[in-house]
Amino acid sequence: SDATSITTYGSREFPDDLPWCNREDAQAIVNRVVADRKDPLAVVEARFVIGRSAVRANALLARDISDRVTVIEPETVLNTAFHIERITHALTGEHDHEVTFTLEEVPPSSYVNVFVLDSSILGTGVLG
Image: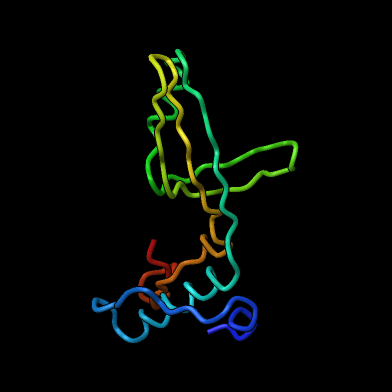
């Protein structure tokens, strides 16, 4: 738990069981979840109109849930990595296909390895 987060945002529970983990693995995962989720992550929506552009259609329709994308928006000076959390489509006419992505910011510890092995056995000590 993180006392500052609980005071600011209230207490939240881990939403799942970890039956496939031993005690140490479960502790590493829970530590990572607390580090990633103690502060809310930014959520943004990005809407695109495909129109008749095959290039735009191919680029947008190739995306999937959990894909990592970088949003660069100069007016708000946003240049941040996000994961796609939701994709919606609106078809209002023959050439009016809109795609909206709901995105959540990549957690700050996304590059931290959760599982670390004895480095004397494997060399690097990281399972990746």
